[in-house]
Image 1: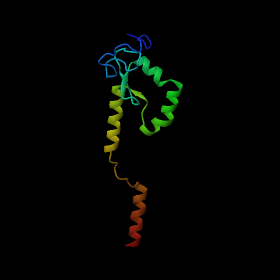
Image 2: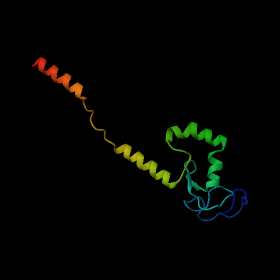
Image 3: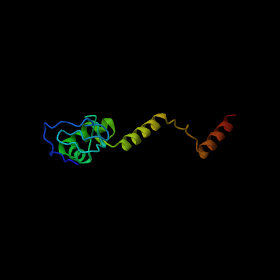
Image 4: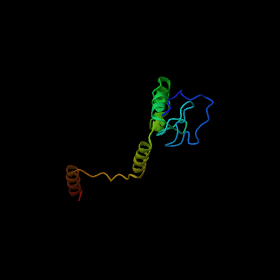
Length: 118
């Protein structure tokens, strides 16, 4: 595993750089596997670079104040987290609530009212 900064900026990139399961997308890193998807760059990163980027004070504040309220997810997610969130979103989209049920006491009151007006 190659840590961030161990790679010179002009080093050739691996062909799988930034791809899911491939090499980390960060400029001076090519660690594998890249299992964290960055919603800002639309690329995949290794766990160490994800931690460094996501929890940088500026990035964390910017994402939590500007983007997460609108998008509803963190800056980085794994494939499992993305799939679970998308399944939940789809289930919510397809949810049809049951019609409200009248309480037994309301039914008694309405029944009495109907009898009184009949």
